[in-house]
Image (cartoon, rainbow, N blue to C red; front, side, top):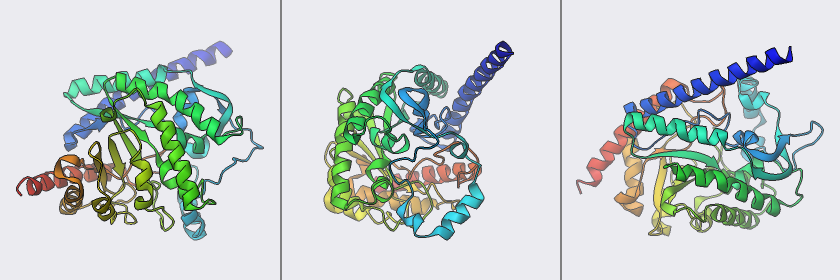
Length: 369
């Protein structure tokens, strides 16, 4: 009986691997068809943008059922509106992978022990890009800081020591992505959204010290990678909500500008942050950075008009220079596997087409001047 189960499990693994490979080819083809220049694999091999590390990091395992995570993960703005939380729970409960999977934690010293899935990701995207003649693509990887949130520490007893070991562990993944010929995208919402959940009990000044520590850890992990081969995504949480307790970009700016990645992705379509191009205009952008602003909202089923997209792009171009702006979405359209994601698939593609058309309009305006 055990042998039969093992054989069945092996066949399922092979079938899943094959389907994932085909899905990545399909997702790259659809991005190219929509007109996207810089593509990715849609993270099709991952159950989430953070918890995928459960299969790659040693020292990580199921969190004991009787142990409560040491930090608060509830967004402060949502906690003030329990009616909204109740509505979301009723609509979404049980539909996502995150709802069904057992939580994990750091139970022993962490290290990178399994590169098989990572190398498979690199191989799959390489194949898909070659088939489509793609010149530039990126692969996302979680920052040490965001992993400390989603994989709580039950071993170290010191957040600094835990972050340090996470940085050393994830450095293996970061380097492999770049060595594979891809741009490395560091997903680092810990530098913004963690202010109103994980660290909501701190003052802004205290939080900024933590953000600075996380940037230092990230810089250490990427010390052997050229900045121009990296981009860093900073966001205030990929969810529909009030966002009235988000830390301002202006406050974060001195900290995130010290991060090594040359590309900076920030939300610009989020209505709580769409005005902050003015802050970038005021503060300026270092010569060694490029800006990748979100001009498409990833949490609503409204399809932005291309003229609005063009207007948003032009604002950022006016702030930092037309050659230093790459238009993007605010965030990914799905952070966890499952049908619970707010934007339906057919509208995702409409939004990406609007992004392309808006970028074309903006280019005509900016290069006509």
